[in-house]
Image (cartoon, rainbow, N blue to C red; front, side, top):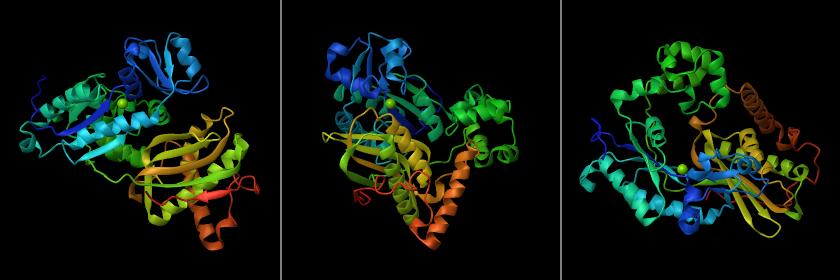
Length: 407
Ligand SMILES: [Mg+2]
């Protein structure tokens, strides 16, 4: 058991299963135990999850499969079985919810938990409850998980990643600033590759450098992102754990009269559906953090792809581009009879689409979208079309539409 001066006070945890898909496959086929396992799409696909043995060979998530197999030719490649992973994820989720109702899932295999006020119920401080939980997951589910314990979401998530797999890491208030000072700026939630490059070109590479800067200066340079840099670099994160028990989504889908396989046919439909989803989000004044692409193949197999965004969105453009990125990976000649796009992890619109100085283009597109919306409000839906749908005529028209209600 580990020692830490604040161990009995910290109650915000991030739990993340280790190499989740690969771990489930190994559990179900013990012959794979000591072999490098990659879960992912066929030869043209990408790596969804690599087990830790495959990672030693340099295999990483999102790596094209051919590259992964170059790095690790002896790897066993397994097609993802999302139904199975969803049911295992649900089992783990229910075990979390037995500890506290304050569980905020981030994806199928990870969640934030706020265990404050549960000590009496469990007869043990959160740290001990979490250690027992990790052992329980191993014994009852047959996979492992890593735990990060801290006083805020940002550092709990950072902590869970420090010692994977089977990790248990603690970051307390006392050492937060000194721990962060040596870390790269990319550790900060919301700092992606592009923004890290911007910061590097301004000479800012470590969080320690951010800690010496004034809030006003960071905000002058980087807008709302600067405010985030100021606070998170100092370990200040006020976000609370939000248990959203009802998983709601807004989506729109269409079934074709003839099966389609080419981007020329599918992309305009995706654009039109994205605009429809966006319109409904805007109307309801809500936003979604996870973009979900749904495809049904000619032989009625359903493919669902999810991507979580750094911030919730209600913009057609972001929904579309995220969906397009996922769609491109599926276009391998397969014929599809249905395409759908939607968002889940719904929140109110207040936090959606912060002005993104990182990617000025996307900011411009967001502004343009606002202009398009007001033109449409004045002159009707057909007043403005984007290049994706303009002049597509019937080919780009959904043949049969379904707009499943928020479900
Ligand atoms: Mg995980």
